[in-house]
Length: 558
Image 1: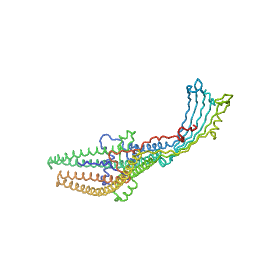
Image 2: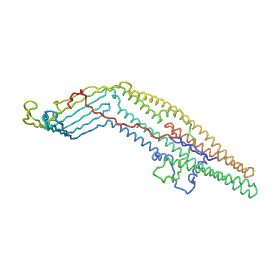
Image 3: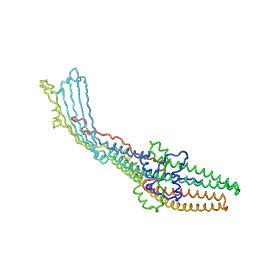
Image 4: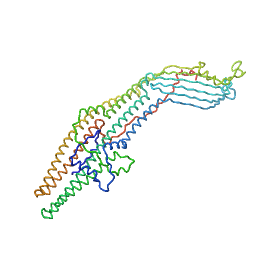
């Protein structure tokens, strides 16, 4: 009945304030911390732990906080993935081929035509951040053939090509690659905000657990003192029963009260052990198993209640600085980017395409005379340098410049997606409005909780003082035979209840302070909430190679 303590675990903080319990209770707390082992058993190593040290340990060791911290690294990696769309792509091909064509012409004789190629092609292509793509390539080949009408055997061919493609409408302002990069960058920022939010929530939970342990240890001492009072009364009653001054029923009543308070003390010790483990779970290094065997001594003391909080200023701070509102703004920005992207995708796909290629040919050239195909009268050897020189001159140029246009006839996938994205943008806007209302209401309620708890502490302190005075009076009356065991026992119970109530209200005030400071930066973490940020997966964006445009069926020269 008197062991109700103190498990408000869903409370948050930023800076710590606390209240004093009475001077006697503070002394009792210190005594309980140094001289008792709440769970009983053999004494263990004791760690005197300040609040700042507990917070530091949590930030360094808490696995759930580490999950969120690693989430920021995941989002940074996604940004790197999205930037890879602009990485130059190098490609090369080296090969050899051979083919024999059946004789299908009088010019090829009866043997057919053998054609053997040794070839290579090397190139680089890249997407440019404004949507264009460029490519440059170099190719060479050595060909041997028995074709009687061939002018070179072997022939050495070389050429280089430049290509450039620029979208003019669709994909000009934003394309798939830029869309993914913008979203990934914002998700990285959101992940960092979520980490800061998780730090606030974790630190607040640590401070709440710290003060809860402090209060439960004080409660153990209060229950111990109450048991000692009951035991003292039982000893006095036993002497008086022996002397025939009071009936044996008074002794039975006093001994029953002793056992009831002993049960209360056992419960209080169990609650204190649970509170200690709750704090230990938040700050323990997972690799340090021995830390579970260390007795934690929360050495910081509770402080006096301060002034009433500036609720209006806190609301303004929350609306400007809450991390969940900042993350919601990022989500709205992402929704707007999706709308912009899909609106752009509805435009005609108009592209400027241009290319240039230079070619060269060398090898062993057959010199012929007479009519077609002529008779070979000699050969002339042209080196590979000749082919290179021709490729970089205007001997055999091939170029193109033009525009390509494509546009869907009828309702496109992009139009349907745009309608969905516009609804999602409006949802994001309304979500921000809802969050702002919730934030203001949460901060105002937290401010009222401080004021209410402060007044309750004053009332509880007065009640504890009066209960102490009443027990003192009742004890003196009992000693001179003017009171009964029942009245003394009842006065002891009233004092115990008043002391426990003072501890509870003091903890409630401390929790309210922690909560008020925290909700100005982060929302409470409700049961079932996850601690991560979902980032969009990065999909590789295909990179096309611009090669210019040529009339279908017309020779391009390559």
